[in-house]
Length: 334
Image (cartoon, rainbow, N blue to C red):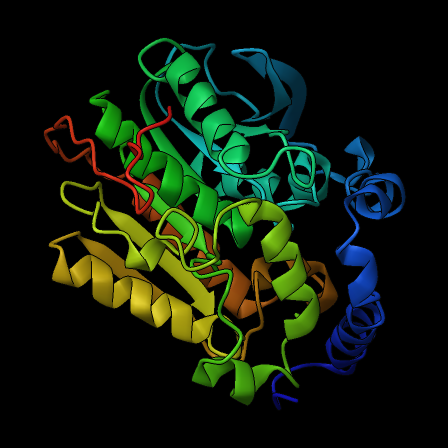
């Protein structure tokens, strides 16, 4: 384990890693088992309101019929706002909820002094691709220009995939594109379990390859995991694209995927900034409490994200693009 990890972090990561490895792979291949037994637990846990900082206001909300939660820093003026952040929560596409991400997003809202909406998008197995992406697009269309003049779309892990995919489809639809796309540890190639970072960090990070692959199949539904609508770095729809802030831990099993994402963005002329947190695992700011709230890497993450969200907005002209999918259909589905 990394030498900078205090004992409680090493212990917690070990417990989480072994717990996830004990999830039977066969169970993840049965949609009804996932829906009836796994999702009720994995989608209901979260941080109760009293645990959140007193300087944050938590509100339930709805955008285009999709429920979610608002996190508002105290003292912020009533909307409409100049800018806001739409956040697609992570959790392997099928799990997690706004509740699981309350503390992380509360810290972001306070640091950046920006309102955040986290939708509870539809999830596989009953709502496989493209339903989650459609929901992020739908929420964006309800917010952009109405609730806020400039909307950033961000996300962590699987939510980072959804944020990037939704942005691609919004651009293809010809609507005003997001102001920027900040992503934390995005799962950009869900079918990958063989790149070098898997071999190097699977004993440090907490994500097991066999279970990750089965969860990825739930999201892909009828599509192959190599489809560029699922494996986003194989997609050619990157020009135009708003600025990207790519943040991840150096000890992630997805690290190779994120290095590829940075390379793809650079190749297509997308402005991308990369921040790598040394000795940190997947979605490391989610675990800042394990450091007693004093994790230097998490604080650096918050500072960089806050700075990104508060920069002058760059004007990137939207265009209407309809790129044929591998099956001959049109990729735009927002």
